[in-house]
Image (cartoon, rainbow, N blue to C red):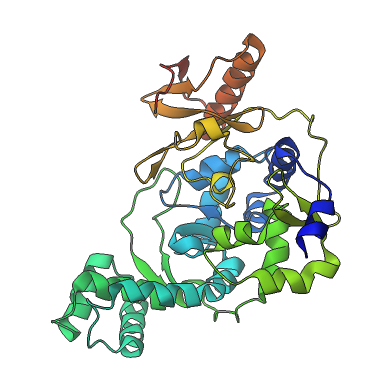
Length: 369
């Protein structure tokens, strides 16, 4: 599309984008979907830590209980695996077996940063050996490093383990990832754990449509940021006849599904407590649809994300558990009505995640990060 035709496309301002994205993310109003269907609709949940996927679903679903996702994990209908952006995600079994092949090229390119430590290593042989090791029994990264170092004693042990993780679809076996359970990270292949072969990589076209359903309206760069992939412009161009085109306040072209929800910008957005690394805040190149410019960087310290609070649909503060107390830190002053709404949502979250437990909620010092 030319610059002139982009300029003629309908404008979606920040609030319009915010409300549309919240609706797709099941955050404008809670969804009746079950945990498995929600996980599929959202194309997985960021899961660098164990608990965030549970809190992410609690913020989005009507009748969620932590046991619902934990049961999916125990039944091997959901798994933890490195996929998008080279980060751990909780995916449905189906998406694990398809989305991982989609990003395999990016995982292979990731190894260029480790080429010095992998000098003289036959990566195909390494992948075959690592597969035999983890399918014989799940292995920790420490065990995998040690076993691979026996074969390549002059290579960097950490690089060997990273190569195994990049070349193979390694899932974290339970009890890791189960609610109220503990377990070290032990790995085996997705095919072995799920007892079925990996699917062929899905056509990028199909994944673009799913991305727009969960995160749109969005630009090509937004999709590339979410997936950790490049060169998707041609895919969007191929799909253009079946998509609507908009522009944001900066003139960037946005694509969307014709029948996807785009609520009125004035639609009320209740408060929501989101976990660290929630994909809502990570899946667009331009995050101002959720993060006001004045709060940019305040939800992070170095490379660690904080748990975030949405008020009126936008980042408005942080939250954290301190013993049996939920501590809420807002970046600005809330009206009395919004403060009461935040307290009510905090109580709902605590009762959902810790039913029957005693707890307090308090507002802490305004975060100055």
